[in-house]
Image 1 (cartoon, rainbow, N blue to C red):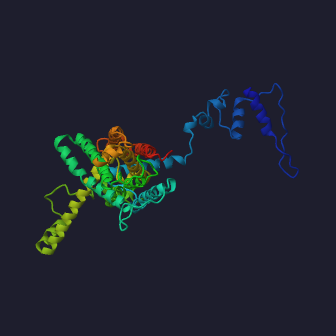
Image 2: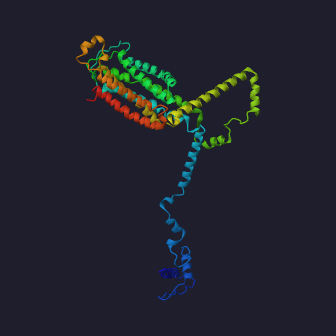
Length: 446
């Protein structure tokens, strides 16, 4: 069959169009009979003239040789556009450079951009506060009743100031509680123990706020309900503005630790070469004095230079403290603070607000149902509508357990293992669950 194909190609190649003006004599065409045979050498030359690769033998075929055939026989994965390969190599090289810079304490990016992006966190918190502040008046409106507070100090100022004061007290006692627990227990156990003590103190102060504002004495209904003015008092106590404000300020303070270690984009290679050249390192030989060091020693003779040296030492100490603080934060979070997505920071603020409202509604409803919330003189009159202490004895341990479990997720012993994202997502689920449970016990969902 190969020989017949060669013969046919030879006939087609030998035919030329007739030109009457041409002076070239057209050779007579030879006809191929059935017995005519074309030798192997002529057929190979014909294939070569037509642009086909030269075959080494008559039995060669397209499937057995040729660059085109080898390309077609490759796997689909190996056939890739050549323009993608340099892009992949550039991306890998950029990742390697960024990873090496992070190992040396430097991070690629703009500090100003990071600060601006984190500006969405306080804006998001303000929106949540506005929505929750208007929710009781829009969803559960009640008739206006006389306020138990003086006209010069109307609601919700007493609730906001009292909750902020109690949060500040609990927040300031966190370090003493940890120091006390670390004296008795190892570091990981001390962290969990101090977390439980802080949760116990926080919820105890929430109950104390109900007693200070005399919420039970001003209730119009015998049991907690959303139609009672006490519901709004508890609601405003739950919106802990100071907690969210302290978290936002602390977040910006943590960002300032990375102000001097940000590498501008496009200059990664330059900073990496400076690191490799050792321009950031101190001299290895302490006995060798450079000319700059000799001039520096000469400046110590007058008082003005001494003050400048003291300021340099202070700046050096401040840098060491910032480096230590940055390392401690990265050990707790499991990643640099500037690498935390803004979305996760917004979720954390949402969790703290929703969880505070939910837990406070649950705890206050159980407390206001028990005889513990009524004065001793009113126990005889309140037997007809006040239930036993059983709801409070059940709800209080559950609230403490739930709050402690969520707080333990953010301890240095647990957070690096599960990740900040997991802790934030778990907080969202638990916060929403507690929020709707608190609304249910006050009858706001019926």
